[in-house]
Image (tube, rainbow over all chains, first blue to last red; front, top):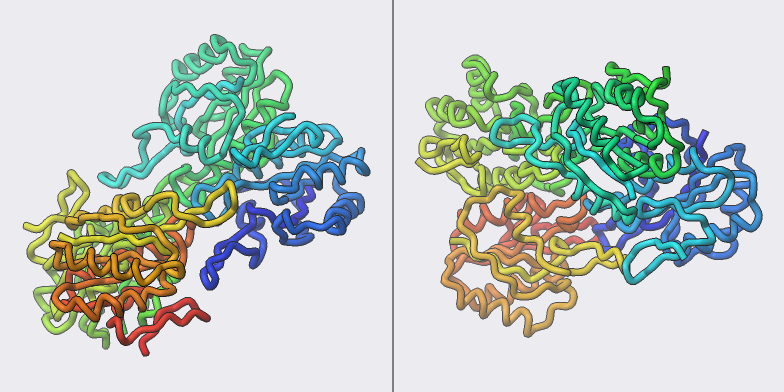
Length: 160
Length: 160
Length: 160
Length: 160
């Protein structure tokens, strides 16, 4: 069983036509998994819906405690890309015995040219195949949490 | 470097508005990889554009020879789902030293609720992580070529 | 009040992932009108869901009787493009006192590059602005029923 | 010939994946008209790409002068919805002999559930059918410029 913890991030944003902003009326994860025709056994749990720039230390601690409390050995965390590495670091310092994959998107699922489903496919596959550890899947690659940085100028994750 | 061999299949079909049929005017793989923001190094090669029900023994042999001739250790084959397992079997009988992943889709990339990008994310991740062997990635799972069947009634791949 | 009679046609087709064919599991008109944010008062009625090449004389007569029986002065008929002109002719021979607009699409609503919503916008506007008569709206134009032909080679409606 | 003057507005916004904002890298009108399979003769001219909340009196005057200078009798102006009525008023005070239709969208063309193509179909049809005057087409209706208001709470245009 794969545990998916939803925390928000670009992949889950929607255009609010009343104010012209992108916000989080609700998660799109069930719609994504349906479109994916995913038959892997998944337990979806909503922890929060936040832009990752607004995540606090308490939020990261809550995510960590949820990972520890989960019965699952394989955990995916949907997350904003801007502070994904910081959350990965916080998790890696305490959790050594589970496979945890953080995943996000550069373009929301609700926008036409979104990378969300591709990234989700990468995450669901990596979490089943990788040994215990904390990883990030973006741009078709699986990164170790401590060897990756977001290049904000190009909007890509790169090995450091 | 990941070698992608394109052979056609549902994922690459487009609606032909002049005759109302689904056909293959050209491959959509470059558009898919662009939408995916994939930065993994990929070499795309078009072998054929066929519905997999129309694939011949010679086609499968051509695919096999292309895999053998490729310099890549990691090979993805886009393929129609109906005879994907038959092609996987043909490859597995001769090729033991490369990681080969076959991938397709239930709904074409050009149709709104397509699973193509998700499946492609699974394939690109699996081909980088799995040991030598022949695999199929569909429905969020990585199947050994000899332990999978397409359940045509439900449109899903299942372990046998 | 605008009466919309649904008869099928390309605009309402969906990809059936179990057999790879395009068929009509149900009409998409409610989804289309929702996406359009249409607030014009509309009464939707499903008459049939047919490819227009399969429409019979009895079908055209049924459509005609539905138009005659409707209380609405403004009627839109969603219809396959291949025999749209034949149905328009059948209606025009008997109905002189209502504004009837036939509309279809070259690409189904469920496919990414669909013209359906554009054509529907044309039809809803034309039916409110045109005097009594039978018209076809395709390609951004309003055609009199007896001065239009589908150019099948180019997939466009043209004045004759 | 229909003249389309592009001024920006929600319909033409795109998601900028580098900063997470919606902006205007370029107009999408050619892509929209291609998707629409529109064969009406159209002259597209880009005047500006602005959120209508940022439009100045000088911008409105420039739009007016462009309308006066155009050889076309039928003019469409793509425009943000928030100040569309103000621009319509400015045009109507000076121009009496042309048919001018302002059109926008609640959701950008680049977002999945966009109303843009529907609204554009309404505008292209209305501009061909209405007598000289200034109009707004939104929500499937054609409004006289001086009898319409945007209900910002519901995101709809309504008769006053």
